[in-house]
Length: 497
Picture 1 (tube, rainbow, N blue to C red):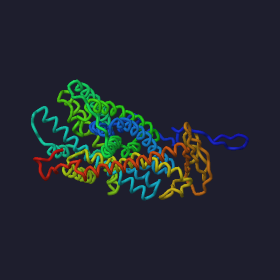
Picture 2: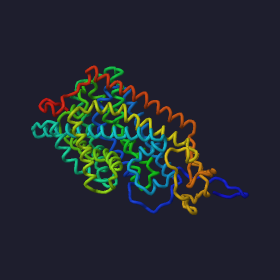
Picture 3: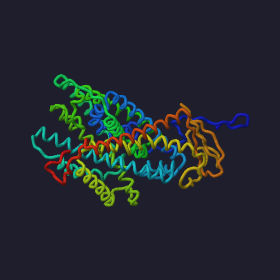
Picture 4: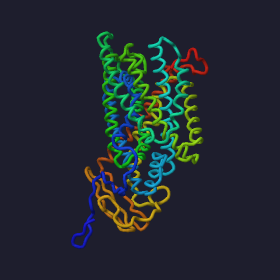
């Protein structure tokens, strides 16, 4: 605040400042490492499934892929701002480790209903995604071993072997404890996607001319569900943000990460659509590539990525369950027991439905549509309506007010006042607002009309697209056009992943 003619005028801080208390350097993830975790989490299954989705959606699928990617980057940054706002309003979130940040955002924005909805969708997304990853890893390894060694070991058996190998690695703590996995996942998927694109281009002279059928309602929205799944990392975003050195910088990590993912997705999606078109018969593009050293290299790289991504993807579920059972955030027998039980339950689902395409589209149209498109803008709007602490669900902040100017920019409001945050394109205007109920500065902010309209439009896109995609998947199952294979434990000889 500055004084002029005896009056106090509001100070202006940049959006990056966000009124976060100055703290000594902390251990945690940086912006680039946060982006690496996003690439490692989001990318992978999309490389394998998107080419077929482009064929099912027609030429419009390419535009849909770009739009969904850009919206995911925007809503991911909005979700990051939601957590930053909570850290500003509730100092206890600075001092305590929060194992379930996404449900916490839902609770502070929309009460118990918001927390339950967020938790249900996050767990459903990550759990289903883990099952898909198990199936993809098993299928890739089965194909690789059969192609190289001419030894046929069915994918169902590989699911068992892979689960046994992965279980010890799931005992690691939080994302910052296995940052190497994020780097490996990001590097392997980037190189793998590039090689797969080159392999498709090399096939073009020997492949029959591609044809492109007009998409149907069901095929288009099935593809939409697949595209949503390909960008379905928002469930993990708050967990990554919590582990950052500067959590308020997370929106930058989201934009960098999602744009990188989009740059990996686009070439292979377009190449698959142009080179193969209707000749593509498999949900996994690798099953349609010619057998060569490039295919084998891609199989190894993408499978390595899926191994690493599996660990990152399931971590929020583990942390949520451990918090529910009051398990300390350290290595222990109880932690290992809970995580083993989760992975074994996923193994049962993978053996029961050894066909990832159906699971992928169904999750994309339901829980991922909610966590990526609906919840972030909705929670952001609800948080903006909370003008005083009593407007927010849950217990009021009860920490003592700061003593003296301890904030970035030397901005410290008087005791009993709160700070009003008015968002513009470039800055946040910070002004004091009297609040007799506040014990700590309570930050409020206003959403410009154009931005509010944009947020509402994204919510509607998520609702309409998600409902249509889910309906298409269910209709395909009911009509028999989406064939379920025999569960592995019923008939190991004929089960087909």
